[in-house]
Amino acid sequence: MEKVINYMEIWVKDDMEKLLKESDVCKCNKCQKDIYALALNNLKPCYVVTTKGIVMTKLSGMYQQFETDIIIEVTKAIEIVSNSPRHDK
Ligand SMILES: [Zn+2]
Image 1 (tube, protein in one colour):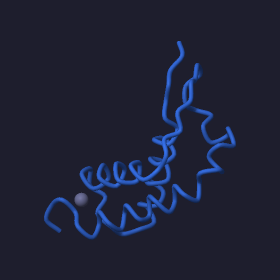
Image 2 (cartoon, rainbow, N blue to C red):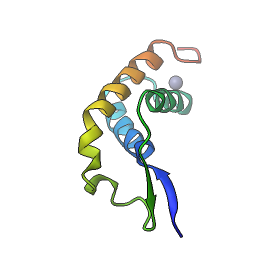
Image 3 (tube, rainbow, N blue to C red):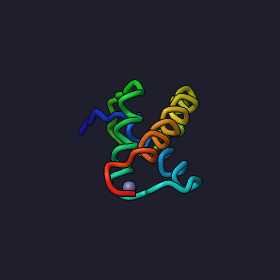
Image 4 (cartoon, helix red, strand yellow):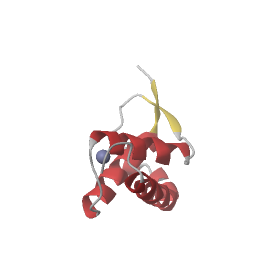
């Protein structure tokens, strides 16, 4: 069965987890969701039709095209959310 998926969601999640590991900001579920949504809103979606699932996303060569933008937007989102988390510090 063919499925339409947004690669950008996978890339953002991956890079967000990596970047969060390296920084000492709040990593609670709320903040992670906020960072994720914020970054995705600032990036173009990348929809693809797939029959084999999502395992090969980083090998497709498409990731490299977007990598810099993703890192920039995720970094920005982490800064914004960690500066004003939607819960007590
Ligand atoms: Zn938090």
